[in-house]
Amino acid sequence: MNQEFLYIILIIALGYLLKRLNVLQVKDGEVIAKIIFKITLPALVLVTFDSVKLETSLILIPVIVILYGIVTTIFGLLFFKNEERELKGSFLMLSSGFNVGLFAFPLVFAIWGMNGLTYFSMFDVGASFIVFGIAYILGSYFSEEGLSLKPIEIVKKLVKSIPLMTYFIASILNFSHIHLPDTVINVASIISEANMPLSLLLMGLYLNFKFEKQTIKPMLKYLTFRYSLGLLFGIVLYLFLPYNQMFRYTVLIGLLLPAAASAITFAVEFKYSTKSISLMATITNITILISIVILYIFANIIL
Image (cartoon, rainbow, N blue to C red; front, side):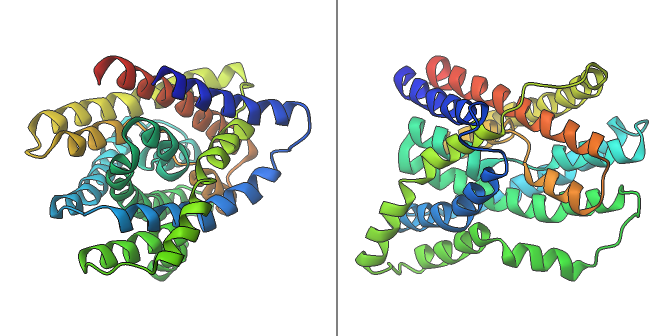
């Protein structure tokens, strides 16, 4: 396990090094991200769901994630009530979402293989609803222009999410005991193998260790809120949920995953200030590093 984590860290470091050497630029990450979310990740989902049997209890994972997103929003409104409007919106967008497909999948596969991916795929379904629903609404509401979106806009974003739609289709096929042709699965399997290295390179490409001193206090406040709440609910659910260990591991670790990078895209869309967007990007990077440490400790000490 230590060796597998070493390889993961080295690939992330390679992405960061390529950026520092100007071989790749941050703008190149947009293309890589599109390839991941529109091609390699959907391919991985199809292969994963075709090869495993989904238990009925797994349907509860996205329900738990969505409920947690609502709870986080309520607590967040109280915890950040004294912050400036735009900063409050930034923190609430970051608090309610999770980076599952890009960050968790490579590490989860290294620890639990395809079985782990199945559980975390269901977690990602719930996370997608939070990101494109709750986080999007909060970002719009606390923007300078105020709430301007309509329910139909949220539905459009959910429907346009290729990974989310792939989850739905793959789940229906699995529960219906319908298998895709071997040729389709074999091609998807080859494509899916690129998901891990591309995801890790992208993480390295987006890493940024520069931040202004005045942002330290708000960052610490946000990180305290996110990980304290996630750890509290994660431990409680792990101890009391009447399901198998992998189910409970998924919930516990899932609630400690990094903030969803899509919050930054929403901030740009709602015309947040450059200062807020920069702070959100820095926080996203820090949560990635923290979550890597959490998963490393979990894989090498707890398991």
